[in-house]
Image (cartoon, rainbow, N blue to C red):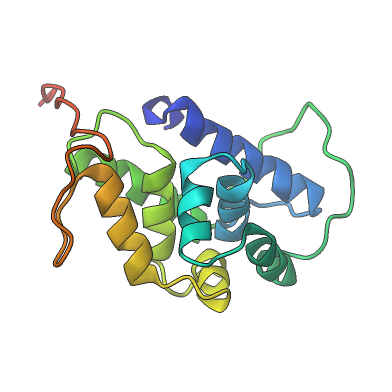
Length: 170
């Protein structure tokens, strides 16, 4: 499944697994995926969330209220941890959205897009609790992808151009 993910998206999922282990959870949930997204303070997703008023520390605090505090240090050799149905759905949706948008691979923005699309998950609840408006997040993600939204025409100098589609195997 993860062969379709960019290195950045793979790091998000790997960090989510480390977060699950550090919080003594035997699963990876949407909250862990969100923690994986906000782990790298220099990442475009974190910068975008901060610009929308969502402080990564407050996001972490909200997620940790759901999954519990850190219990142990993270070892370098993590075993495979199963994803919750909501986390699996979010990762599957990120693949679907990348394909639907004509992108060759899944990036961190696709994961964020799929998390906020599930309004009843820990990640979406944490984002809304800290004041991140899902509609504004979507607008910013669409802008990164170069997709026009009402009142926000595409800016050719921002975002990435849609990548070429690979021929279907069917």
